[in-house]
Length: 155
Length: 260
Image (cartoon, rainbow over all chains, first blue to last red; front, top):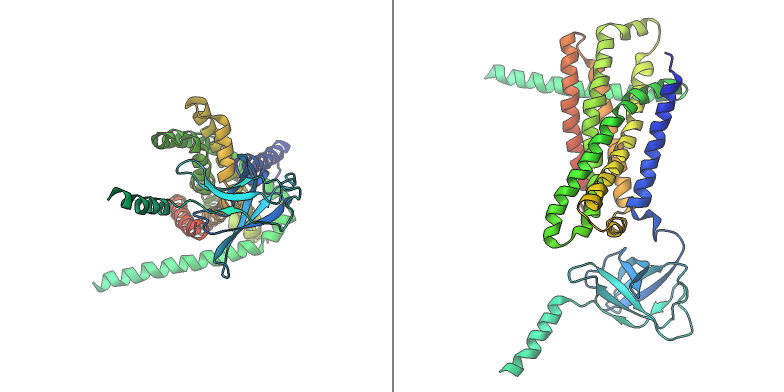
């Protein structure tokens, strides 16, 4: 069976276009291009309650994404949640007494970790632990507190 | 009554017989794949007829499916003021489900039926037995290149379908409905995970490519060598492929995304 050259060219073109489409999907559509690299360092923080924080949630400082939540574990001794975050390598000037709080993007949005810079000279490095943390606001608890604290005043 | 039971038994026996023959045939095809590797020209010709000729069909379908998704998704999302999520919705449904499944269904109709008809006609005109007479193994010469070509073409076509669909959604969402362009792409990138979504979609398309091509070449090989038999085999290819695709899609989706 003789195969003309144009068929071979068309097949090559077909395969190449397949690779271009794959490249487009991985770079433009998925998160492969951002924050998935090996660079960066891990820091941990203990929270009393993480609400509905999920692995891969953003870590933001001043509203800018600087990393992602890498792992969430439960510490059976302190009964706290241990959140490990991967911070991008270029942000290596964060003060070591920065505090972390779990915030919600918008009223019904997903939860993320917000960092606020402290004043210390020392900077965060791989393995550092954030001491100052603020738990997630759980709506049921707030409503409960509100109900119980407002009841006696009215009566 | 006894007659009915007998027919039932005969039907199920012949069904298992076909399944068994199909599996043996598949193993034979697998074993002859090395002989294709040493003669890549056969493979190139088949990738042309299976893949390249399905190209325009897949591109046009992908574009329109993406555009329809954007229109329909906008209708629902705008009720919640979440138009910015349109990109995520279009991309996730394309990459996870519609890309592999719709491509496989179209592929079964376009390439699978053509494969069955071609091989069935070769059998009807005794070309296959002619090859055997010349000590050329038709499984090596005819079946294996076609099988491999289907397995290669399907993931490429499904990827193209998803990519073109996302672009179609972009044209409608950003161009026509006026959604913010930056939000469209950045939300998409934040939500679509490479391993979770794109690789799983790719695995799906490989599995569908395997099952469609297997059914197509087996039906052709197993066809009754008359014009009516070839016609029936072609119909069976499309029907069985569609069943197999949808069933496998459910199983794969449950395995991949069931725990999310």
